[in-house]
Image (tube, rainbow, N blue to C red; front, side, top):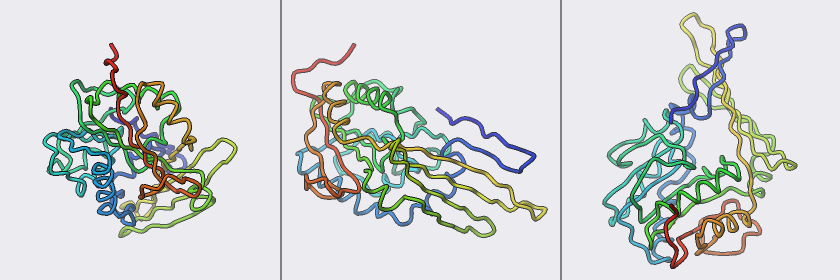
Length: 266
């Protein structure tokens, strides 16, 4: 599903874009601080701990496929990589990402089953509670009987520590980006606004803006939503460990599977 079209305010020279529509070309550089090698190693650690050797993988909210470049279990024979943003997923390499599809994670266009489903870097925090419940129904439908769904969420502790009234500036050649981040504790909303200033031929700058909104759902919500969808929570871990004390976790990883002796939903 392609994102909505941009809308330009010609009188102000400002273009407002759907999330990740304008960010896509800059995404890899913006994410240079992320250690995808370590993240891939951690995911393999979770697979080993939960005794899984998946032969098929469906990755959701994969962005430009940066994790796929490093997370390559030898057992995987079939791989599909998806993201809601067409502009993002089209930049993923087919050599590492496999078959690439722009798709809404809460309403997936696939049949058949997968031994592993994956959704990382708090992509699930972009979804509302109802959308997450729909996603879990899709997980139940598409996950094999011994399959596993691994995803992570960002926490309120992380938002309060690192994203409360923060401003960053990134430069690319003649263009630059200003990123503003803030957290609203009352609504549990984390916001990231990107203002792109792109040099034009006449020397002026075109300003384009993207605003991203995430919701900080409590861990208990995900556990209850999984149970409602007849899924079993096998593990909930702090950050990139197998520790279960979440008191100061900046990120929480979940390992989920189908409950035993359950039939697929019609």
